[in-house]
Image (cartoon, rainbow, N blue to C red; front, side, top):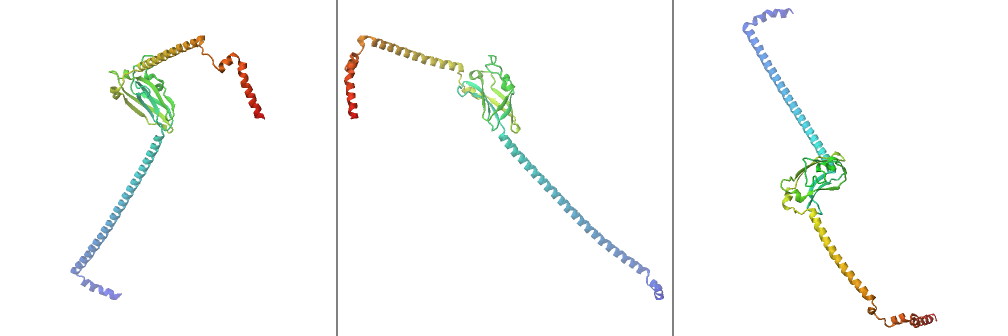
Length: 293
């Protein structure tokens, strides 16, 4: 212990100012090196942490995109399912069609037709007129079209294929100047899946105007009656002539001078029926006797 103490003065003498400065400089340099290395390590740690953060952020963004894509796929699948279901329901819903056209048996008459062309029963059918409609028959003992029961009360049920035809107007009267031939009908009905889609029908009769035959139903009916009356007159004349000839022939046959004279067996039957038939009866009896024997 005393030896170590004795060396202290000697060490102090060795530690001069220059040596102390050098030692401090070395220590400072070592501190700088350590600080630089620590800074580098910290920088590397920060870079690693930033890289990890960026990687985590990218993974989060990728996960978010995947979730959004999955949600889009779910939404598309749901929309496709709803569209398919809606299409199936609409294909099974009734479809009530309104139209105006010539009658099948008389082209001079316009008929208002209402038909269910859908596959199911139409219930609570409501038909609305978008604008008032006038016809040539209004005020002639017929209610205006907007007062018809089919427009005020509707139709309770219309099975598939059921068709209704209503007398609308006379074509020749419909196509007079100043008469509107454009109509709009709005149809609503209930089907097996609830209310059916609302249907709007815009009807324009103007294209028929240039090709329409102007003969009225009354005129055509009069012509047909006249033709029938003419044929009946000819038939009556023929019957009368035939009746007169038959009466004349009957009258002539009733006169004695015109009766045909009987001959042969007919004359003998008229004169003496018993004597005329006796030979024939004898021959018939002899024939039967021979067959028995």
